[in-house]
Length: 134
Image (cartoon, rainbow, N blue to C red; front, side, top):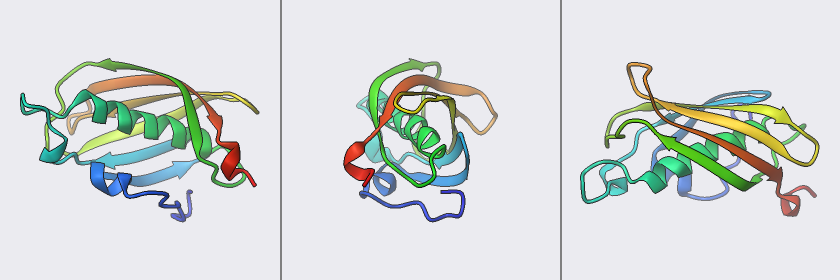
């Protein structure tokens, strides 16, 4: 992952405006620029997409602790929405693996705006997807 050889498993990253910018064991940084197609009728980014980017960050942080990339499955995801997320603005998403257990991992993630203010936070328990572990 740190070498930029991050596998594109689907088009989701492109659809939601996610770009993996940095990966070291236990931590990932994502640049996120949500577009208007992710907005709710009120004009702000829908909470489901905010949860999605946070889920991606916690899973990637956990995956970065392994010898090779294995996608993660989320067991639970707790999200706190702190401020509105606006389309066409760039946010920094940081994911950190707090507990890299052999079977169950615990990670946290934060979405920060351009001024460094947190707009959303999450914590999650994840496990490696054994279908990809072969």
